[in-house]
Length: 217
Image (tube, rainbow, N blue to C red; front, side):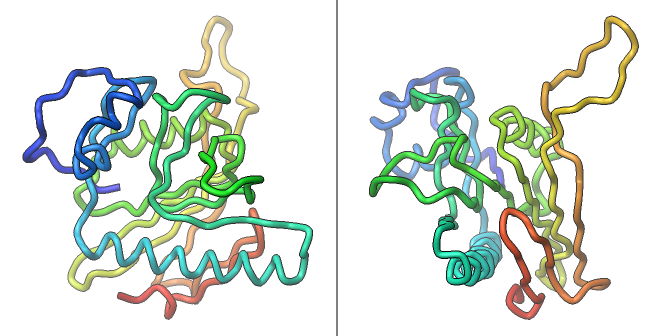
């Protein structure tokens, strides 16, 4: 989820999906709409795209292996695909770096949050924590069961760690009159680092086993 502040055109604070569609593709493709508010999230350097694609390849392989064992189950693994929040409308959406969702009934159908099982971000060194946390809260608020983040390093360019987060909606007891800021949040349930593990191993939303050798630059 790379960001940049350069060369941004002067746009209104709020837009509709229809208004966004009137912009050039190279501009519209760098914007998300959060309840209609314009949020800039630009594409990153080649390293960001490469690591995203490597993870997509590993997840897709694992999904297909499980579907071959369980033909009645079906998942799609995608990259940079809009997730539309809510049951209707398109002016509230997020675009994760990668995602896993249930196979849809029709071709070229919009992906809704209710269909998504995992959303994930590849975090470049330039990412800011407030934006990362704000986007994670959007995924949690939409009820997406799993969130993953991939932390990249420099010199050499590599994946430092992969973290899996599970959706939590059962909050701890709070003092009377105190309510959580968000009704749902994520709790970290798995972490794999290149210096301490052989790869990624997790069983949700399907068995996932990806050795680090598949994720090298």
